[in-house]
Image (cartoon, rainbow, N blue to C red):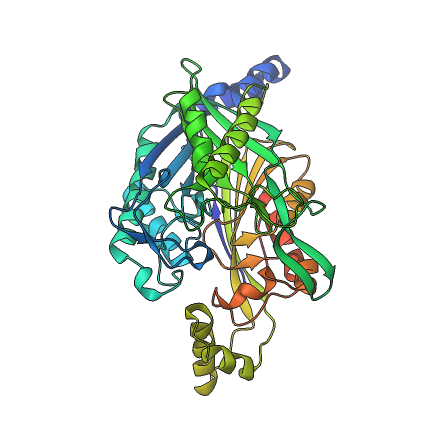
Length: 478
C-alpha cells in the first residue's frame, strides 16, 4: 500500500511567458539567451535562520540510556532552517534539529503548523535530526524512564521549529547556490562480522564500509557575493559527549568554526546515512573507541569544518531551479515474532522492551491480527533540468551507510545527497546482509515499537522506491 504526494507546481509570470514565446518564434537566435535565463544566478532565492533550544532546567539525554539530569551545556542545541524558492515560487525547506531522534508524531505536528502558519506544504519540508546523543527526548517514545520526558520543553521545541522556518522564509533573497564536495575520515564502521550470528558491535572496524563524503551547498548573496548559508551533509553518530552534558556534539563545533570564519553566515548540519558509522576516535589498537570527551567532539568538529572550508574554496557546480519535491510512504514487510517472545519481553524490567512486549501481548490476547508491514517514509528534492540535476533524498530512520552509497550510484549522472534520520525515526534500517548477519542494529526493532524485525528484501524495496521518486516525474507505485 503506497500513498504518494506530489509537490510539483507551475507558476509562470507573464513576462517570462512572453520570453518563452519569443524564444520559440525566433528559434536558434535566442538559444543562448534561453539557456542563460534558465541557469541565471538569480534563479533561486535562499534564506537561513537559527533558534536556540537549550533547556532552562535540568534535563535528561536519551543517548545510551543515561539516567542523570544535566545542567551543564558544552555547546548550543539548535533548530535551523534553510529555505529555497524558485521562479515559480515553489519552495523547499530543510529543518535541522539537534536531537537524537524525532518521532514521526512530532514531525507531523511541526509540519502541520508550518503549513498553517507559513503556507509550505508538508511534502516540501524535510525534518532532519543531527542524532546528537546529548539532547533531551521530544516524545514519550524516547526516554529511558517516562519521567525524563518534559512536555513543556517538547512544546517549546515544536514552537521554535515552526518559528525558525518563518524566520528563514522572511530572509529569502536572490542567491547563487553552488554544490561542492570534499572528504573527511572522522567516522568509522562499528560492526565486525565474523560469521552470521557472530557480530562484534560498537567497536571500530578499520576495514568496514564508510561514507567519507562531505557534501556542501553554499548559498551566496546575488547582490554582493557574501556567504549567506552553508549546508553540510556528513554521516556518523555524534557520540563523543555521552554522560557529560547537553549539546550538539561534533556538528555543533563544526558549525561554530564555520560561522566564526564567515561572520553573518548560518552553517546547517544534515545527518547522512550513518546508522552503522561512529564519528569518534578509536584507541591506538583499534579495539575500542577512546573515552568520550568534549575536547574530542570539538577536535572532530573542527576537522569536519576544515573539509567544509576546502569544499567552499573549490569552483562548485551551480544549482538552479526549478524545484520539485516528492513524498511517499511505502510499506516494508516485517518478520513474525512468537507470542512467547512477546510474553518474555513483557516480564522484563526495561522501559523499552517491556512496553513492546506488553503492547503486542495484549493485542494477541484481544484476538487482533498483528501488522505484517510497517510504514516507511521517503522524500526527494530535485533542482534543475536535464540529465544532471542535484537530487536530495531523505530517508526515515537510522539508515546504514550503504544505502547512501548505492543511491549515489543509482541516480548518476545526477549529483545526489542522501540523508538518513529524516521525517521520523522508524528504527535502524540495516542492509539485507546485516539483517542476515544479526547484531545490535537489526535487533533494536523492539525499542522502536515494530512488531518484528525487517526482512532482507526491504533493502531493495527502499532503494528502488527512492530512485523512482527522485527521477523526473518520479512516482512510487504499489
